Length: 320
Length: 287
Image (cartoon, rainbow over all chains, first blue to last red; front, side):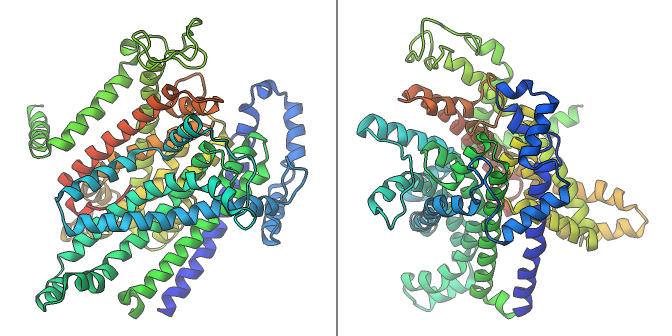
């Protein structure tokens, strides 16, 4: 158990290192020299001369040797400033993360929680009464929500709000401890959209996983012992069936974080995902690379925690 | 030739007879593919043609889905958008699967150090949320259809490699692989003739399941402004243009979203049916 934990923990270090090299390399070495969108995207700059491109490169610090650029970036990441924004007059990216990250974190955490609250009961109901009307209804809804692009759902909600309730998109973020009501208004839309699509995945996974466990011999034994259905499910079925659902939540988090960028844009939420898009438009390469790294780090960290939880919850791994 | 034909017709007929619901969605997917392939014949207007007398026109008999903010026919743009979506999905799925399969087979079959290193690379590629990774690649390379295809295929490689590898690890233990090795078949020959055929079912399933995900990812990238370059019609870009309106009009938002959903739904449900038919063990695996 200790060996497993140590191994799992140590293996994240090369992954994290590889991640920084991957992001850094992609932003520098690929054709376009890290300027791809920053030059082509803009209509005017399509006629940029070589001299102008060199000037932009110097301004962004791209003319320095690669190892110095990488070293500078890593130094900034390790001292916690995450580098300095080029479009915001050298403001540390840490400030951007702190001011906008709260809303994105709220949306992420609450949508995951809500998706469990919605998805689990639906999946359980389907698995306990397979092929019932509820099961059919649940699986139809699930399949539909898996196919809906969640930013489109967001646009539809915004459209309905604008038309029926005269909704104003939020311009600045409000932290929950400053004004809970204003904060709630900003996060409720994205949470609704993100949690429904996640709940679909959870429900689907819970159904197949529960279905599998319900057919196991030890469940039959428990039932033939005369235990009440409720007790069998709570004590024997759920603990075993929920483990795969936990794992899929970690994998799904990737979809959630990726999808949240588009959802935040749809709702014009002042969160981190939209900051990446804004930074691209403002040609702020430092912000893009550090925020992408941040998303990768959170993803790795959460999956590490889930793996550790898994090994604590599953005696088969705990004992070996 | 007749043998090949029979070997295809038989299973297809069985699939349609035993799984009418999934076959129906397979048919829908087929219709959408036809829509994309024959877009120039089917589309009522040129997708770039501007009707100067009809900006932001509501749907009517001339323009079934209305016109956009500069008077282009939305129905035609949707039909051409199917083309862009499907080209991206088909290319990205093919490239991503091809590389992923080779990666998975080599890593799983050779094992040892090769596997250890290949697995680290897979882990690094998996460490970034797919869409964010793709977004980064596209902004670095500059938005265009080919960079979108490149970015989306790269994000598919690790999952394909991982799934194929897990199949290979099982296949590797079989007697006939050992037999092939005993009679002196080369590593390459074993992988090509004996391991690869065992992965076909899994790969077909992975392809159909991935297509839906790629269509949504392409739409998201275009929506974020780094997808296929305008004025080429793309569903995601149409939604982005709808979102830019101060007062969004419902027909701007409705049609592209409905078509994305319909296409993804069709491929997902057809894929589910295919998965159950080909490999029941994969039941419950997610995209």
